[in-house]
Length: 228
Ligand code: BJW
Image (cartoon, rainbow, N blue to C red; front, side, top):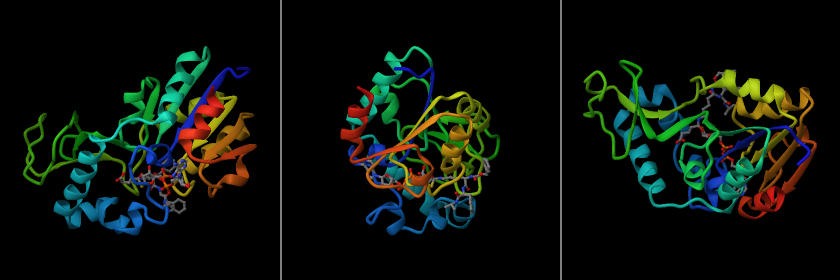
């Protein structure tokens, strides 16, 4: 491969063929539940029981699914690439790790972690969570929440991501609708710094026009074809 520094951005579409719901497609999560109720700090303050139920259900689902060919192809790309590599995922599932990816950032958090809103500690989390759950670090009850970045909150590790985007000479965006910022701006940031930019998505995304190249189709097919 002629490139020296690769940044890959993934979204819900990369996990769709594993059986995880996307958000904004016709039957996606946001067609069934109002995102303001479950994906904002205000929704959580208004009804923490509903929010815990929503994430408990999603955490249980993730435990039953497996990585697909797209996750495995990205792990192969990382293993076989000699230069700098960073996988930035918006997904909160752990399918990239389970497929073998190592150099990755979960910019929107992780289902298998809990965040204490009282002391700020993060803990690995496996089972359900409720308003009765005590924080393993400080012992406070009623402050544990899923470690998920909600609307209006700052995504994780933005400095590291922007540093990688500035150095990248290849930016690959996979399975994301390009509706949610700041991830939707990464293609512009990478392109401004000279990277070749490519979209691999089921259909043209909102930011399709910003890419140098696009291949449209299911991730489980187009990602291995592109990578191998
Ligand atoms: C397939 C496929 C297959 C299907 N193969 N492809 C006005 C203007 C601009 C910005 C704002 C604004 N008002 C508010 C904002 C900011 C806000 C925002 O972007 N809002 C927009 C909705 C307008 N953003 C934020 O608040 C973020 N924080 C922030 O901006 O902080 C300030 C800041 C500023 C500057 C720098 C840094 C920081 C936080 C956003 C947090 C998002 N959180 C969620 C959590 C949901 C909870 C949960 O997980 O349960 O993250 S929302 C949800 O959307 C989730 C996802 O990670 C994220 C992105 O969705 P994604 O992955 O793109 O999924 P879909 O469903 O949209 O698309 C799937 C795609 O796959 C589709 O295109 C399909 O076609 C495709 N596909 N099957 C390949 N088999």
